[in-house]
Every structure is written in structure tokens, then in C-alpha cells.
Image (cartoon, rainbow, N blue to C red; front, side, top):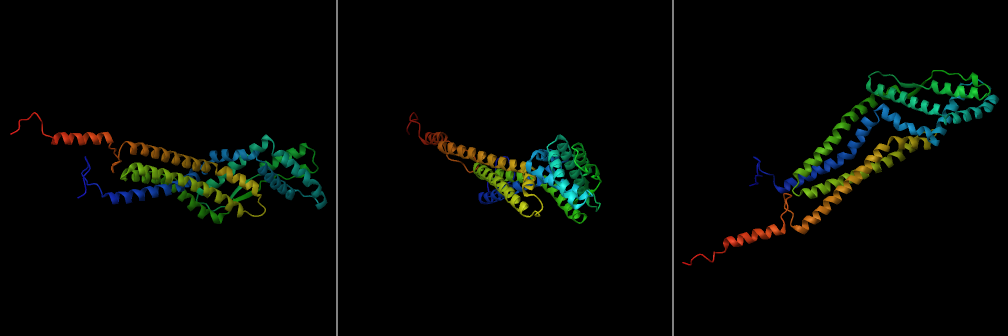
Length: 327
């Protein structure tokens, strides 16, 4: 019959069943941990407008991003300028140089933050609403600032650059329904996956026959999850850049990817370091315990001195007292 633990009305499960359930719970917890970190980052990190703008703000000083913005804005301005082909070839270098100079000013950094905030707000509202309209943003303020700088530099025909409130498409309407469903799934998974990972891991350790071994296994699984998360970020970066259209500058896209996933990279390193540290501490503690005495199945430790004392007491209880009269 299974033994009844002290203070518990229910008998303890067999040790074989406990080992199996503990291993299953710890495995599930370690598997869910990197997915939970990824879902929480997508649902709460990317969905926060202030954090998104703060994450993207340093890219205003990135040379690759500046070049990409200068080429994109310059091409857009030249398409709007109504001049002949020979004149267009003469004005184009001035426009691109002016735009590149503009990307090094404080006004560009302010415009960069404003553009990212407007884009993020538009996308977030579209994901939370039910309207089937394309997501667009207006970049007219950026064009107006470039036009003012060109005019101050006395660039020919700069005053003829039109500043139109043109809606730039960010997300097409036919993709909004699929993105909304995915966003709602991420909101649920971003909360419950980390909670489930912690509950499964704690439950597996509590149910384990040898808890120190369970702690070590959980720590190593956490470190492995952190390493897999970091590897997934590397693979995702390569796949993202490989799927980009040819006209999209890859260095700028790589800088944006690295900025957006910086928090996840930090989390992966933390999981790896935390898991290895806890596993090392548990291993060192286990070596010390084995030197002092055997490890009992329930996690308690019986020292060699205590075993010797118990044996001495049993021997004394079985030895007749020499002072007793012999019948």
C-alpha cells in the first residue's frame, strides 16, 4: 500500500509515477518558457507605443537607416517635382544631398520619432478596431521640412516642390482580419504561456522524488530554452532579410530588426545565465551533501554522524546492563 505522508489525508503516489509526472511537468515548463517570452514580447513590448518609439529612436543616428531614408524621401520628392528630364537630372543630386544633410539634424530625429509614433498608433488602432480600412500614414511634415531646408540652401526649383498630404499605405485592408486574429492570440498567449511555464516547473519540482535533481534539470532546461530563443532570433533575422524585396535596403532592415529584437536577445541571455547559475549551485550543493551523507528519496539528508548515533543507540538498547543481577 502507498504510504501516507505526515499531515496528509491522501496516500502519496508511487515513486515511479511521481518521477514520470515530475519529468513531464518540468519538460512542459521548459518548452513553454521561450515561447512565452516570445509571445509576451510581441503582445506587450511591440504593442506599447511609447516603448516602440523609444526602441526605434536610436535608429535615427544609424548611417544605414539615414541612407535608406534619404534615398526613399529623395526619390519621392523627385517624383513630385514637375520638371523636364534634363532638369530633373540636374536637381536630383541637390535633393539627395539636402535630404542626407537633413537626416543629420535634430529636426530629422523629431520627425523620425513623430513618424514612428504615427505609424504605430495607426497600426495599433487598426488591430484593435473592426473597420476594414487600409492603414495609412501621412508623411507630408517630413517633405515640408526638407522643402524648407532646400529653399534656405537656394536650390533651384525647391520652392516648386509640392507638399501634399498623401496617404502612405502601411497595411492593406485584406490582411487586417488575419492580423487581428493573430494579435488577439498573442495577447492571450503572452500572459498565459509564461504563467503556465512557471506553474509546470514549480509543480514538477514539488512532485519530484529527488528535488535537487529536479531543480538541476529545470535550470538546465531553462538555459537550453534561452539558447534556443537566441538561435531562433538569428534564424529569423536571416529569413527576414532573405524575404525582403530587392528594392528594400538590407542593412537598414537589419538595423531595424536588431533594434526591435534587442529585448528578446537580452531575455535569452538572462535565461541562459540564470539556468546555468542555478544548475551549478545545485550541483555544488549536491556534492557537499553526498560527502556528508546519502540523499534520501524525499529530499531530506541523513548525515553519517546521525546514522552512527542511531546505530549506537540501538546497540545500547539491545545490550544488557552489567549492573543488573544475573538470575
